[in-house]
Length: 431
Ligand code: SF4
Ligand code: SF4
Image (tube, rainbow, N blue to C red):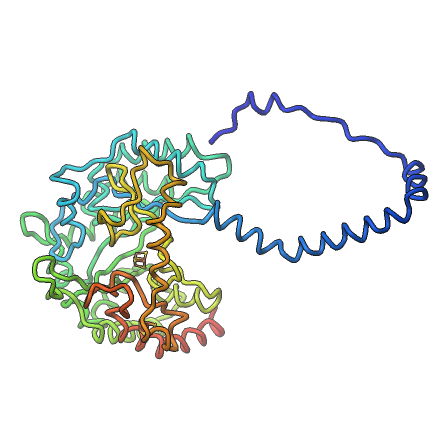
């Protein structure tokens, strides 16, 4: 928040005491011995403080300024598409029939609370459902509030995950002006994209999404493409890779799909098998390696390279704790994770509970720590440091047990065995 000027004006300054060199010498002669001891004492304390400084800083930062982003769902689960594999469309049962829309009061409280934490980077990630359903004026207001409550020099980032259908010149101008990083869902060439990504009348949406990508290019909006790997497109890594390269896509993210049918509990037909996932990623890796790693960024490989260099992933799937972000729903309810928007994982409501309290709640702490409950198989696995048992959601697929290994365990073993050594080599030679 802006510092109040009157506060600054009321500060008082006291003059420094002036000690002449002569009087200092006399004092030293008189109290020489005691001063020597005193200096030795001060030096020892100084050494101890310097030695423990990183630890102390870490602790202080850890408790007060743990970086995290806000994953905001301003229109709740509402969407203008009807994709068969969407896991969020069923959240109507939690929030009642729509339309669901975030009010200006909630937007303001959330923005004010978050920015006043003064994190190194404050990241707003707008998602859904479909966030464009809020209309452009809502985001103009959001940016206005960010300017109002942000301090001078504070770094704010906005990410925007959309199906692209409503993106027009007006949207793209705005997204470019405020440097939003846009994620557009596109499952590959038309025959794959239009298989599951249909509108409410059952029509394919490929052409509209491609038009949105053109608009982003025209207005120089930075965007990446999110590909949901399903039973249809996973069998054609070459076709997908060639398509994205031919479209000059520079940033790609593959999200492997596995969902249980809420009625039967069985794995859905559009899900992929662990073997399919592993084979797909390895084939994509080989294509990417030959194409030129510096010409195309693929999120999983970026995250693995980050791990090789800094022992930390950028993708929460392989993180040590599940505490990278909190979800803020349209009505101000906060949750631990996008995949756990359920009453059990509700942290509270931003209109009733300040964000610091939501963050320090026991529900949040317990959830974050669950990542550490590894299966015996993971404990003895050589990939454990880089895998950490994968995403909690994927551990629940077979038995609903957080201590199971991931559904994608077999994929991860294939991926890490094959890709990790080659990525290390690529890093040492090309970048
Ligand atoms: S590869 Fe499998 S066994 Fe190894 S840590 Fe990952 S999920 Fe666990
Ligand atoms: S449960 Fe999965 S998606 Fe959620 S924070 Fe943990 S790793 Fe990330």
